[in-house]
Amino acid sequence: MVPQTIAWITARGLFGRRRFLLLIPLPLLVVGLAVLSRAFGVAPENWAQPVLVGLGLAVVLPVIALIVGTGVLGSEIDDGTIVHILTKPLPRWQIVLPKLVVATAVTTVTVSISLYVAGVLAHSVRLGLGLALAGLVGSLAYSALFLALSLVTRRPVLLGLVYVLVWEGLLGNFVSGTRVLSIQQYVLTIADKVAPTGLLQSKVSLPVAIIMSAVFAVGFTLLAIDRLRSFSVAGETS
Amino acid sequence: MSDVTLSGVSRWYGNVVAVNDVTMTLGPGVTGLLGPNGAGKTTVLHMMAGFLAPSRGTVTIDGEPTWRNPSVYRRLGLVSEREAVHDFLTAKEFLLVSARLHRLPDPEAAAQRALELVEMTSAQDRRIGTYSKGMRQRTRVAAALVHDPQVLLLDEPFNGMDPRQRLHMMELLHRLGTAGRTILFSSHILEEVEQVSGTVQVIVAGRLAASGDYRAIRRLMSNRPHVFAIHSTDDRRLAVALMGQASVTGVEIERTGLTVRAGDYGSFTRALPKIALAEGIRVRQLLPSDESLESVFSYLVEA
Image (cartoon, each protein chain N blue to C red):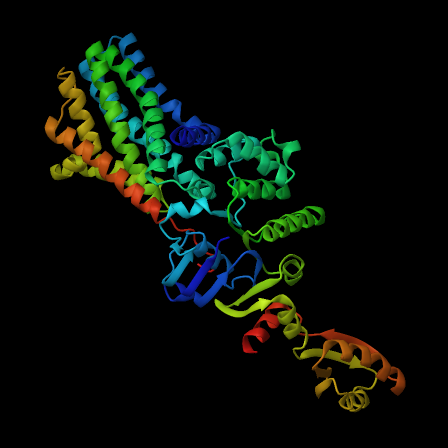
């Protein structure tokens, strides 16, 4: 009953806030661009890379995961309601895991449906499924990262954006070594290996992608649990 | 019956010492944690509630440390000062969530009982976002009481309550204290503390300044020297007459008037009009110049 209750109140909090509306336009943009390209008869080779990877995997997935992942715990920390959850005799993993599940589920549903539709329009159902699966793995890894960020810093959104835009977006293009620590690259690889179409170019190997995704998910979840154990409320004199 | 014990507890933030070597034991009954704003009351409460690690010393409930130990919340309820509640829930839902997270055998009944305790049953199906400050406060108290804890900590619980709600909350705390619960509430208002609790812990600038029965502390406070600024039609003659009073310990004559130090507030304020009348002097101004709570507290620290 405890995990359901935590998940329920987390979901209520997430959908009750106005920033939930931010989740809607981005996936629609991906589907819209795919539909338009298809309707105007543009060859998939010309639009699949920018729409599926440039927009879908590199922007929509991490941004949605950022909004949701920092929302499930970060907003409760911001407004102080987290205290009501923490003053319960619960091991902290019982609080972190349901929140991670909610964040991953909401992100996956939001992102994977649009990726699936765009993938089908670009090539095949198989590409659609590959992208949807990649969306699921990416949602889990990003959610764990952003959930942990909301416990280690007071500015999780800013730090999350720096990771997505600077580390993955900018350095990922110039410094090849950073790709080993880039969720975007793992996700790209998984989609490409599940559906080898030639439309996506993956740069890390599948084992690296799978293992590192798991390392991100498990590592940051453990970090979040540990940080929540030592959660401090600042006093009046601080 | 539960005891909360602080032994040699200090807490600092960088170079700032917020709480300095505090040792106290709270037993059953209501205790007031009194001190001016910024004295460290909230820091002490947060350490008791397991939301802050002491930099030095130990904070325990029945011998168990409160830091990094969620199992203490079986025995502990906390009403923090920040009034954040999940606004999108109704009081009923909020209480049910609290009861379920405590794994109570009958969450519905526990939620209902707690709502009745704070008289919030009539508004229980409205969203908390629509409540007044006092109603939110009572809802939060209900949530802290849903598992019938042995220890209840409240940070400035009377803030934002109207007199009727205040009275009701005082009765509730009193009742819980009499029933053997260990209750601690913080306040910067002496009158609040004396109406609810028999014992007080006075904290000033992070140090425990006084501790024990409030009447003794109250006496200390009213017996301290008081300073008055007086302006009259003949300051010098009034000064001479005042010096003859046993309650007056010093008079200074300045261009703007007299500064009078009195050892006893009551007898000085009773004597002044009689003297003025007898001497035919008209008192134009009488201002107690150190009545701020901070000066009362700082006197306590020096005493």
